Length: 262
View (cartoon, rainbow, N blue to C red):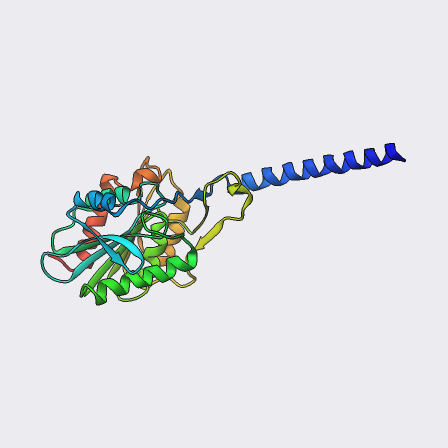
């Protein structure tokens, strides 16, 4: 009887071990391409140093941190959200710097919660914050024509903000949806938080730019959904699309035209 009980326990433990192993493998395979959150909120002084490269200064937009440079004249603005990065403002500033916008364009680079802003990101928070930022630049800064833009994860914020009162949207490294979790020992055992674009596209002029070594079919899907012009960058990866010369040239032309600048 005792021997039978021991065998039963050993078989049960073996099955549990095999089942646990299969579960871990399945979750690993399901999340091996999932972008992880790289959450880090640096001191405002560091944010200021990053912004100084473009003459931008730190500003609070509600609970969010941002870098702002007001237009030399007029009421034209460009709002930008960067991608999932441990050096958020550094990377976002580099992208906007490459767009070489004229001084008549005000610039606002926004950091979502967890990315040089306090807090934790979430799909619901993204939607709320994007609408908050759009309203802030119109009501607080008197913006009359606004173009919004984003890279990678930031394209979701840009699309929400583009749903009203904007003149255009430019997306670099766009996707149809993505999942993300905090990095950590057990992150692959969690269901990733899903970011999914809304069912109805914003009805604004749009430009989608994507590296052909990224996920070009997703960019084509997003561009078709938006009715946007699609620019594919040859021999270019997802990170490489941010500061590609073609990205810089095409984004500059689109933003200036959409803002109706000479």
